[in-house]
Image (cartoon, rainbow, N blue to C red):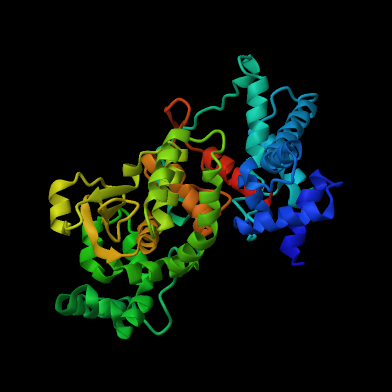
Length: 464
């Protein structure tokens, strides 16, 4: 028997240890016939899926065990958090955020397999102890609710010094070559000559010139000058950048610039993630987990399931936005299938922050464009995943902060999909409360709590 078959057999015998072998085998055959491929699939089993020779009570015992395992794990974690906070409050009635952080760090260091924020593929989310720290502080605030102890205040620092108005963590956040040195054997004048050569090529061949091998090498060589232009203070407008570096607004060079900036091949990464984590996210929402925007999630899934050969990527993005209660138009805009870039600039209210524009219905669209600062900067291309890669690249390539309307989804993509997990800094300046809808300033040294919560639940779902 395969290791997978043995795992499922054990999942049966743990619940029904005295089940006769012939009934065990009958049950395993039935599960295999309906497509069970892993232990995580067992949570989707219904009573009518089980063979007739299993009694009703045995069926219900199996279903109860398989469908509540994840809930039980979360319950034990919450109970542990309550116990720890009670112990902390014996010496400090209102532990600070930094104290909660220190305790969470110690716990994760001693028990990483149980409490670290790590996806099954080894991706560490942020510091690795962000979700536990958040749970501890949330519990502290809950038990102190309504008490004067809960009002910790810090003196507001007011300063107009140049250091306080300089560019901050949003720019260099997660970057490894934010402003490199001029390459050996080159000077700014020689690089500007190469820049003029590329502008001339664009005038003759347009975006098609991006496929030339010579162009790729020229763009890599002039990366230092590109970053110097982008990082200038005050920063140039997108229109000015497009005029100076037209090939930087082609998908190929957006990906290449992002790779030099972060050491991540974003298109390959997005394709791999959608194949693996995309399926995980779909399965997670298909089980209708508590705490999600259930009606909207259900509507998206019904529409997705009606379509044949539908790309899962747009469905995953819409599900995330529904879960975070973010308006899809904060990230994706729809346009007519036959619309041109000029049509879109004339008819759609394009905001300053980036938008992925899809031609047709989001779930079935095969063409996309990219807009920034009210203009279409990348004309129609195919493949929604490629569009998401280009769209996300623009935030890092051009030092842009995440828009409030899609900040949770963008940070989730950054941390879970792309794997950019700096432990401090932020590309989100404000945080919208899912409960009240109020806007708060976001601390620059923490994972968004809504993102952290969903990542924690996905990690539990994936492991269990």
